[in-house]
Amino acid sequence: MNEFESEAYQHELNIRRERLLGAISSDTGDVHIADLLQQVDRALERLRNGTFGFCETCHDAIEPERLAVDPLLRYCLDHLSDAEQRFLQRDLEMATAIQNSLLPKNGVTVPGWTTQFHFQPSGPVSGDYCDLVPASNGSLYFFIGDVSGKGVSASLLMSHLHAIIRTLVESMPGTAEIVTRANRLFCEGTAQKNFATLVAGRAYPDGSVEISTAAHCPVFVIREDRVQRIPPAGLPLGLFCRIDAKATTISLEKGDSLFLCTDGLLEARNDQNELFWEDRLENLLRHAHRMSPGNVLDLCKRELVSFTNAGRPTDDLTLLSLARI
Ligand SMILES: [Zn+2]
View 1 (cartoon, rainbow, N blue to C red):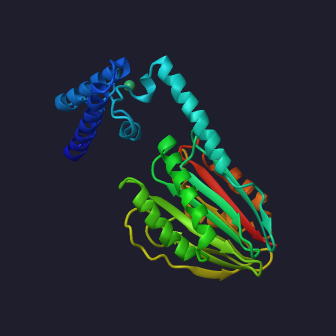
View 2: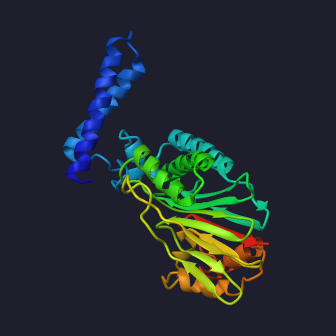
View 3: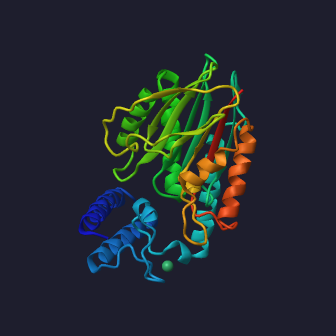
């Protein structure tokens, strides 16, 4: 932990201390407040003697995302007490239920388009974002993204992004405006170190598609004679409050499709530590013209399992396919 972080924690703990002192003086001897005050004092002591942020059992660093949420923590995830583990399990179950409720219905079909997605967290919850929103004029908004970090803190940011975008879709017609405005709201509503990559798209019944990206993985356009890549452009959401996103418009024929993914696919590694990466995916997708979205996803999942030798995924994985029908 650097000096800046240590000072930030000290400031944070002192604020909590003052609040607790305020509460205790107006209270008739609340034991819980006295106990919390003691815990804050012990955390301040750990900051002074340099043991703050390290597990008291194994002396390894406590997971930074957990510490940022609760600076009173004294143990890493591997060394929680039984009661703490039960609480954590309950929190995770709730977070999983919330996240699942935010996913769109699978197999959304609108005039001219049919879709399928695959959402696979590497742990109980995911930092990936995926949404499909049919619009009133027959078009379909589609979104895929990846927020920084992993686990519960990332899944909370994902929920935040989901809420921002759902609100914007109601009032902003263009994908560029959605990305520009979402960036601003994400910047204002999250801590400085958090960011998210995003692709925002809108598919129309006539086969035209508008796409805006914020530094997310390429979008693959599967055509009869070639696979076209729309490279990642722009900056991730949350880094700078003012960005002006641009939109690209492409046109798809019947039988063509779009394939989007998160880095859980492109950055998967095999036993030789090689990356799955974009060229392998592009070669694979050359065989996917006229395939249904479900079959495209199955093709990619099979290739990933064979590439990683069925190893355990280390990152959240989301795949999204939209076919022109
Ligand atoms: Zn430990």
